[in-house]
Length: 480
Image (cartoon, rainbow, N blue to C red; front, side):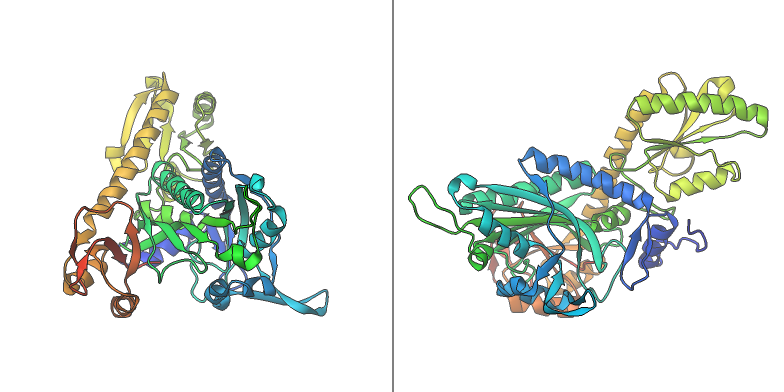
């Protein structure tokens, strides 16, 4: 466990705070190749909980999991012009294998639309074969120049869904269905209040007709694209000849979608909820929901206290609580409190000799610091009290994150106010600009359109940048 560096204050150096807390909370470490990461067991346990929450949602809509190879023929990527153009700067290309130069280089998978397209062209023959609803859990490689653990690394972990449909309407319905699944997961599991919306043409996925996103505000006011759902239209179907025999004995092209959420969402959780003491993990995803810290001074006290701890641990496990007993005897209780606060464990139980006499324990919540977050409760019915407190913490964390986002989102109607708003948070504006206008704003302010929110006001307004009449509102922000 990395403990050498003092945790910087968020308001002094948010970037240094993030990097330090990832290491000190034992979430991850740097890999030996620049830009790679090692996800440590605590970070991987969080990712597993994210996987489980998403996987159940996907399967509830009829999606099945599959596995595809990591190597893609270079020729596949060339078939879809926008796709290869979009990914060309990030490709990792294998030119040698088995000690020999390959006749044709292969690409280490940056994403799987082309692989899926090749398979679907072989699998789909008739309308009876549709829809095809697949999801992959894998890693991909994108040769990023600027990297940051979890947020942007050369190799990262994710799920990528790929579906094929008989009609444009079905494909769009699936695209929105998966966006809704991501929104539900982010809000109700991760307590991250996201804004679902559509990307602008400039921010659209390479090869998609339309890209939809969930955007979250981090603790420094910047945006993080936290999950995307793409309507690919017939672009990949035409590139890979994905057709089917319909009921009229004609062979139209399929309509396809893809959608993904990656391990960068771990970064979203860290930066949305963390504070100057470290992580704050939402109870529904936290690898450890409560930690028990026994307190004693001698062997006699230890025997009695640890017997009570064992009973409490069993009660909590029976109630479905993910619990850990910190029985490290070489560390002081105070060190342990700070350690588990750094790791973001939602609740903590302290029990010592005096608590045994009073038939009580100290129960603390991570999201409320100091004495205000600690209460002494009777041991009778403790498991139910912990479960109720975990539910309360989950609700409170979402409320706090939502209040922070709303307080740092400003409606602006002129460029000067826009610059000020996007320097610290989100700017919500009426928008009728062109791609050229969008690029100019990005060059001058580093802010981009994060999304055109699904929820739009009625009526029209005046574009803050062009002065033209506008019928839609956009969210601009600087982003990771």
